[in-house]
Length: 266
Image (tube, rainbow, N blue to C red):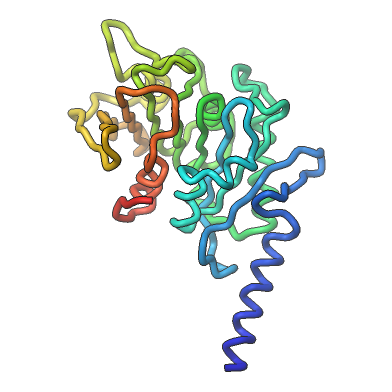
């Protein structure tokens, strides 16, 4: 019994050291004064390297919401994924310019988190919603870091944007009736245009025949996949008939698929 208690104390001491003084509502502060929030997954042993999801919040939000959000944090903490939620200056992001400091800020967040937690560098996911989704695109376009996948919801850059970087995979979901960050419809009603930038960037060929999926009625998704892209890269587009929101279970399903698990909710 004493041995068990001793081991337990060592594990929780490791967790405490890894987390430091910042976790959940308490922000981590970088040397330049900018901040981010972090949420460790449920049941983490304090030692095992963690996949990480860097999530950029929507306009007018902050990371305090993200680490409590059931459709974001609820997905990561049940799947052994470390959630990082940076705070945008003025509660927004500067994503239209390629030389934005917000890309470097995101990189600093990852570097700081790596000092606090053991990060699995082969599984770095970058995500966002709305303005944050566009920021996730910008980050993936400009960073030199190895990004396993972009998980983007209802927000894009202009499809003519030139990127210097390239993640290994992009997964994007968008509603056809979105009136906040409008669905980027292509010519002649082309519903695959929202990921034209990445298809061009990756040198993708023809898509697989679109398939429908949906595990949270009444939302159904029309999924189109390009998996013959250069360098083994891949693009996945989910289109639904509704508007501007984070679909329930979408992040959970993407993480399950990317981590080789059977998709489930929550």
